[in-house]
Image (cartoon, rainbow, N blue to C red):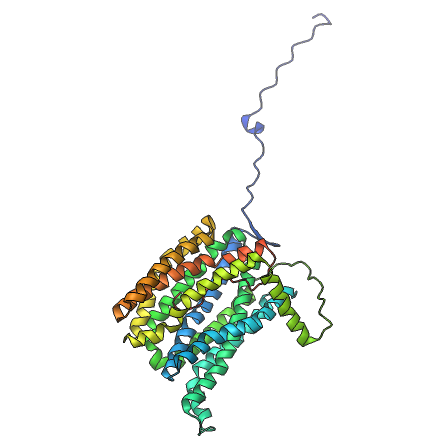
Length: 418
């Protein structure tokens, strides 16, 4: 072979098709964020489970205390004016005076357990103690009357009731604002509507249970029922507070009123709260909307039990009417939450208020017998419940779009028929 000629080099065999493919990258699981908290699907399920268990106890408390307190006051022969002052006006006054202070102090608190849970760990046993005190008021009033024989026993009973009712309402209202703030701090925003839809469903299940099986037993087992629910609420909600974890929060702005003294600092906190909330037209419109909705439902919610007695409706039949309302609302609770996420809560609230307007006009004309009152009462609960479910996520949405304290309403009315 000539030296300038070389043997041909064999062509390299083509690489296998598998070798040309890029290595597979494992798919990153979807996560949800809320502040510094990051949830996987499993973490979100665990969060929902803990909060929903706490809400089950919370809702059982709300579904039971108000109707049982109303029944007891009417048994004592309390007039309509005093009844409305105790059940409606007094809690509203407590809310104005104390909730801003508690909520703003919670906003500014930083601790190992966060800024909401430490306060909830205080208000929860106070509310439970108030419920248990109301449960034993008939016995305590009888005992106290022995020391005041000149006073009427009913008057002593109302005073005893008032002490425990004030204790319960203070802790309940403060806890309501704190629980709203906790949800706002730990639940991802894109899940708020569905989350509150599930909250609404849990509340309705509580209402069905209480009104189907326990409402008719109130005249004979008042103390046993209320004391049991109060104990369950205290233990269950306290457990939830220990299981839920808050994230990290930004540093607190300096408190310019720190040197003024305790009392003046509290008043300064309230003044700052009112300046923050009521100097913004946006907040004013949100508060006005929620307030007017509550005022629209308030008369029926407050006087439903006294009026049911006037049309000779038994507590058992009244409870069954509420149970029917809750069953209707239960089927729509998650759907309403989804609609609130899809179309915005305000649009859903507008539709519910229009429906309630039509029901109110009909009820004013025809709800004068037991049967017609039952129809109007069920429709009242359905439309007011739809409004409450839709408006529930409006507060957290608003407070995330603009800085606000934790008192912006989020969970709606706790009235027994909504």
